Image (cartoon, rainbow, N blue to C red; front, top):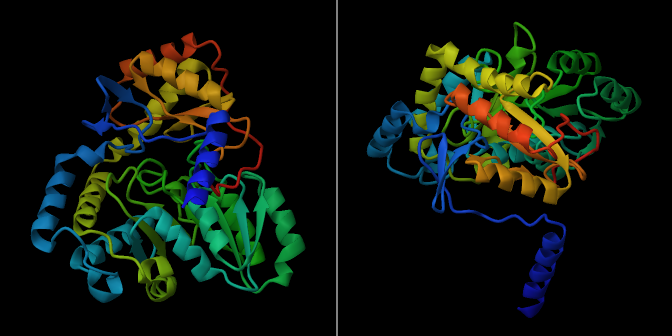
Length: 397
C-alpha cells in the first residue's frame, strides 16, 4: 500500500534530519570483549555482559547439554507443554539468591515487566514510576488501566508528596523503579523508597536488570541498600551479567502463583528455551562461588571515573553526556577510530539535550585498556561529561 510506505518513509526522513535514525550494524561478538565489525576488530565498552559469562565454557556446555536432553525450543506456553525441570530448578535458584520464597521466569525482561505490572495494578489502582525508569516498566504501566503518576528521578520527597495527595483515592498502589538505571548508572534509593512504601501501603517493585551479578555481592541492588532485601517485588533479567536470556520476578509464593495463572506475557507466550535455562543455572553457580568476580565490573568502572575525575561510579555503567545527537554520533565515531566501540545513546532513550556515550565495564576489561580508553576520551576535548539529566524522559519509544 502506497500510503503505508509513504508514512514509513516520511517518518524515517524526519529521524534522519534529527540524527535520530537507528540502524542495525552487522557485528560478531568474538569473546565477550571484542567485536568484529566489517574489517575491524573493536574492544567493546557497550555490552551488558558484565561478567563475560556469555562465552564461558561452563555456560556453553550447560546450554548444549540442555539441548541434547530437552531439544531447542520449549514447544509452547509453560502452561501447555513448555515447562520442564530446568525452569523449576532455575526459579528455585533465583529465589534463593534473592531471598524470596518463590520466583517466576518469563521469556525476557521486557515480557516480564509487560506482564507483571498490569497483573498487579488494575482499574481503581495507582502506579508511581520514576521518570527515568526503563522502557519496559513504562510499557507495563501503559498496559494497565491504573492511574499512573511520575515522580522526579530518585526523588523520594516528590514521591511522598504525590502519595500524600493521591494515595487515599485508590485501592492499591504500586511504585516502579530501576534498581540500577541503565542509562545513568546510578542506584535507586531503595531503603528510602521501601520506608516510604511501608508508610503508605504501597508495593515496591525494582527492575534489577543491571544489578544482578554486579551489585550487593552479586545479589543485586536490593542487597546493596542494606543487609536485608527491602523490595517485595524483585524483577530482573538473565541477559546481562547472567550471560543468557530471559526475565524473572522473585516475590512471595502467592504473588508468584498469581503470575503463573494471570500474567498474560507468561500465559500466552512460549516458554524459555531449555538451553537458556541451563546456561543461567550454570551462571548462578559461578556467581555464588566466585564473589571476587562480581566485584570486578564496578572496580573497572571506578578506575575509569577516577582517571577522568568523574563522580565515583555506582555501577558498571558510566555515562558521558555530550548534548546533541550528532555530537554523540561524532564522539562515538572518533573513539571507534581508536579501536573502541562505545555506542551513542540518543533520544527518546534519554531526554532531549542529553545524548551521551554510555560506557559499560566488564570483569574482563584489562586495566591498561581502560587507561587507554580514558586517554582517548580525554583527547576528545568536546566530551564534557556530566552524570545525568533532570529532564523527564518516559521510556515509551
